[in-house]
Image (cartoon, rainbow, N blue to C red; front, side, top):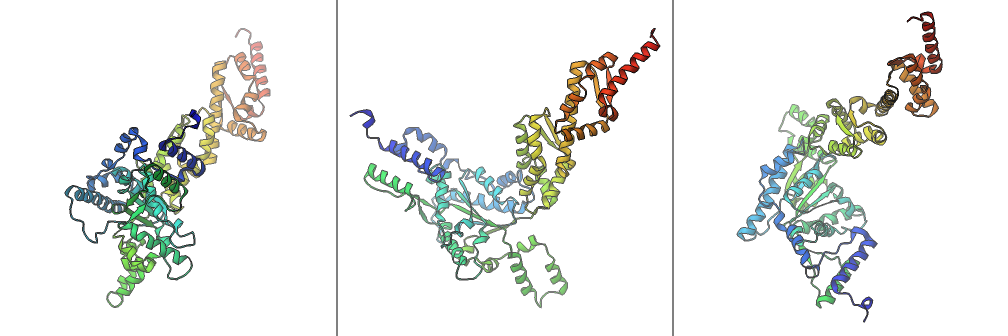
Length: 513
């Protein structure tokens, strides 16, 4: 039999199927490698990415200190998260080492984070997962309720952990799943329409948040069916792969618009007949963050969550809204991804980017007006620097200092900067070619800039055309310095001719000189 008719071995079949599925469906389809098909070359990789990489011994203060390097204005939230998450992993280490008897009804410290958008909820959990060394998956709860039918496939979140762990099921079983916009699956009390779907999502999450077995291969998925067929062909039997959710930590978050009103109503009901009118008035004016910190399970149930669902989230963290000063401190943080990212954007073109302290304060003030938290910092920076990012790589400018004036009126300041650069470039070329230092008054620069706009040409090009005879003319006059005023800019040829005539006239009048 010729080589092209050779029957491929199971490993080759698996590779070919994986390549076909990837070309057809992209990264949505993932077939984890079979240990006995992957060969010995996969063994070191599996060991490197195994459970041994997890920091089971990290102390709360160590993690707290790490988070404070990157996150500002959320000290209380950082304290709670660092403590409970470190305890979660240290307790697992204790149970593994001591082989303690499993507690009946044990509840994991799953976390509910309440806070407005852009205050760093996702960022903190992502940092924690990276520091501890566990896989991390983030999803929006809304995608499980928009389909119009009960639940959606929330088990995909657990399967995604295996993908993030590179196919290592054991490592995935210690991962963190972060579900944002969880407030969007709260029921409003109706028993039909979207509320049925929202309640169904909560109930489907319940079993995953404690301990359950999730089959890695989806029953009706093409890739899973092909993989199962290959396993049967290879081994003669099908062993379903499952991931246990016992140790997976769940973190939920949302803005919870309307929860504050529920808490206020409860507090007012409790205060009737027991406190003075003055204290009741003070409570009415109490800030939102302080009110939200008084949240109880009954408030979340009234908001629209099942009591069993609330019971699976024993740790509740309220995050602070960020004012202009908080946003400024984020920018001043040496680990600020906003500033460091923009510096790298410009460094890619060989341009050094700096920010004055006043500019950072102005960016923070404008970002605060957007009411989207730290995300607005990126928006303001992009609005300020986008045109600079486009224009400066085509110039000789290699350093840009961002000022408050640039933040307030980026286009006008960019035009000024490009004007100065064009004039400096013309001066450098003129000096190198003629040995004469040429200068311009401010009025002359303004006139030349208007003229360039009217002609639709660059400022340097206009200067080259207007003053093309000045190199020879000024040499003829024996000058080493020359200043172009607005009259010279308007009548360059006539001005040069008059200067030469006056020079000859002086020589004729004083031949001995």
